[in-house]
Length: 510
Image (cartoon, rainbow, N blue to C red):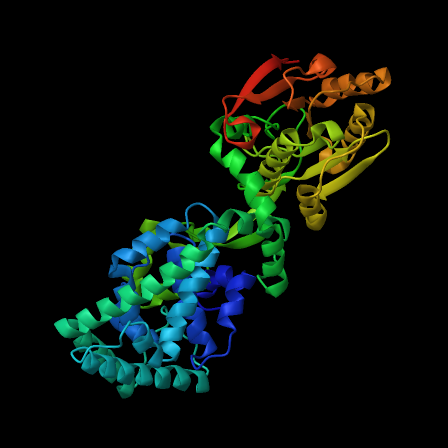
């Protein structure tokens, strides 16, 4: 394993990035992977990739050095990185767009001329021709290494031939020339402007794309997935905006669900202090668990200094070990949730829209945090649909159908509560809380069910949250709910806008 294998693992494990890397090109696969790795660290990990040895970088990746430093020097680069925000999906999409553009430019020099509107000026043509000549040498370098089966690695000892050294000197001279720097600056700016246009096209879809990636984990963005996005975008966008725009709704969702550190929540889980099994590769100053490739540096006087510098900075490649056990101290991670959603005819209209918005926001949050959630859609007696969204079972299509279907039918809270309590018997949900989402126009009449609920609260610390939509009164639900939230109109905007006030009318702490 080379020193870069640990870095390459993450982008290569992403099907979306693999689709770009494996696309047939003139650029050899090893060079495409290396370029993808560097851009991955910049865009997805948010690092400021530092080239510590320019000559060695050029020996491995040739004119990509000029393109990379020119892209980073452009003001557009920082703007593009900021567009990714905190969403992993948006970062992956942005990386795909940038990686495709960079590989296109290196693969087909003729494309450089096309990114200038009106073509290249006479003054820039000589620098373009020099760049093309260096690119041809770079291709020769890459293919010589493919034939000799020498891996491309920035950490490997340097042993280049005369032609490679000539390429290094050419690139260095080219970089020092004012006209060449002007050409590369214009090339980077125009390339990034073209990238920005592509990014702007998908920027408004990032939230729905992220939701689909959570519902269909590990699935690449093939034609079927894109068609699914086109079909579902309207409802995903409609129901996600309400919660995004309402800070009170977001705060309410933050408070729903128990932390795993609370009483009644004791389960074996991966603990950072465990050392029973290999989990991944990371960077740290842990000498006991560093990769063998790092110790090789100690045998070379030049690399020894690099080893100690990385040790002090905590950047040695090390094995990340993890074990099963109960973690000590408070845990921020919250437990699973069972949601009971009223789909009766009385919920039609604004209450239905609010309920779907809350459920969508809840499911997105649960999946992002790696928490299991089970959604029961209930109406008349013994009429319900169960949608399970867990690590082992992801009923994504059924959940999308729920967002697109209209609510109708009667209301029977007894059915809903019975199914919710039965779900708490399952091992995955034994420490879950219950969430009712309804207009409250019914009541639980089964005394045995209420007794089971109270017993579950005493034994497991189970809590029941109720969210009332389209009504100012929780009715009999407040008698056995631990927390009741009333979502009421806050202004003329009504339920169709972000103007929703949340009133907590009951807070029982048992």
